[in-house]
Amino acid sequence: AQSVTQLGSHVSVSEGALVLLRCNYSSSVPPYLFWYVQYPNQGLQLLLKYTSAATLVKGINGFEAEFKKSETSFHLTKPSAHMSDAAEYFCAVSRVDSSYKLIFGSGTRLLVRP
Amino acid sequence: GAVVSQHPSRVICKSGTSVKIECRSLDFQATTMFWYRQFPKQSLMLMATSNEGSKATYEQGVEKDKFLINHASLTLSTLTVTSAHPEDSSFYICSARPRDRGNHEQYFGPGTRLTVT
Image (tube, rainbow over the protein chains, first blue to last red):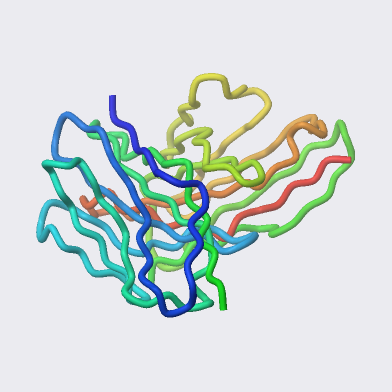
């Protein structure tokens, strides 16, 4: 069965510091992986996606993620945090069957300190 | 492009009444729409998958008679919470998968906050 694990329910960084949000997946076949961001009382916005092309994926707002098959990881990074990055971040994997259902991690809340 | 809207954004209803939430794909046709429920400070829980012109498929543990889903067109799906109770209070989010795309991408609506008093 596929699954996603996000390590750290809360991550706190200083403004300007590196952001690293961790995501590990479990999948018997090459997965489709996604990172979404959610601001309070809003829906989810797609940051980036991995669909078996380049292993380093660049997304919006300066975020990027690297797919590492050997580590079954898809960690999200941003070189320099901005106050506006404070939000909830979800990693997700798409089911390998034809249902296209997304399996979400538990989420990581990013706090950015001034 | 790829905008999904939900209406209403917030609704307060009395216990025992029914509430309908609409999910629309504004600039694309959606073969499949998904309905999620999110409790405070938690992840999204998939409730059901809605395919245009066919019956919705519900996840295990979701009462299909309580959460009625209709996907009447390629741009509209509705979720009706019947005989609502306070424990149904939650944030409901829909997503839509564009037709003619094979990259597993979904676009999410802004969510609907339901409060049952």
